[in-house]
Amino acid sequence: MNVLETDIPGVLVIEPDLHGDDRGWFMETWQERRYAEAGIRGPFVQDNMAHSRHGILRGLHLQHPHAQGKLVQVVLGEVFDVAVDVRRGSPHFGKWVGVILSGEDHRQLWVPPGFAHGYLVTSNEAVFSYKCTEYYHPETDLSIRWDDPEIGIDWPIVGHPSLSEKDASALLLKDVPPDRLPEYTP
Ligand SMILES: Cc1cn([C@H]2C[C@H](O)[C@@H](COP(=O)(O)OP(=O)(O)O[C@H]3O[C@H](C)C(=O)[C@H](O)[C@H]3O)O2)c(=O)[nH]c1=O
Image (cartoon, rainbow, N blue to C red; front, side):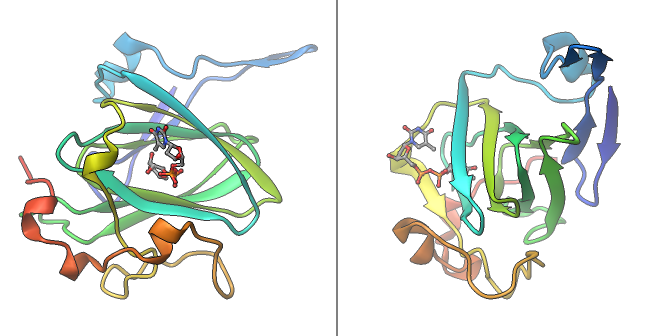
């Protein structure tokens, strides 16, 4: 398993070992001891899966309180996956990391608690699967605008993505009340 750092400390790309043979392939998508050694600690309490068509953008979402760490990967298709540091006081506040994840490369992204997360489907369809370190708390769920100019995410899209009503009416980061954002703890 290779673990690659990104421009934001703590956000990691994981390249799991793939065991191929004439039947196909096998991979361990998570293993507590090995991932903890890489700095990816649970406990993971919930697994999610979502299917989306081309051009769908889900995000940018976070929960606070009850911030979720997310170990994300694509089972089928391809997405552009983004993590944004929205921890108050972080030296990287407002900074984003974007990576292509696909069912072909099997890569994972570790999105620590305190980050807004979202992805754009760049294939005809995509099945997205991820582990969370906190339960779903819709009452503390928050959407931040995918196209917030102060974050400036370079989404690989021409025109406008397909969004949920919630995401279409999301706030700009500057308009989020400070107490709705997690605190940075070095
Ligand atoms: C997130 C979630 C949703 N739901 C239900 C609530 C709605 O009836 C339906 C769709 O929810 P939503 O539109 O919030 O789903 P996404 O837009 O994919 O939200 C996710 O998108 C971005 C990329 C994330 O990182 C978060 O995990 C999450 O916010 O699933 C649940 O029952 N449990 C859950 O944990």
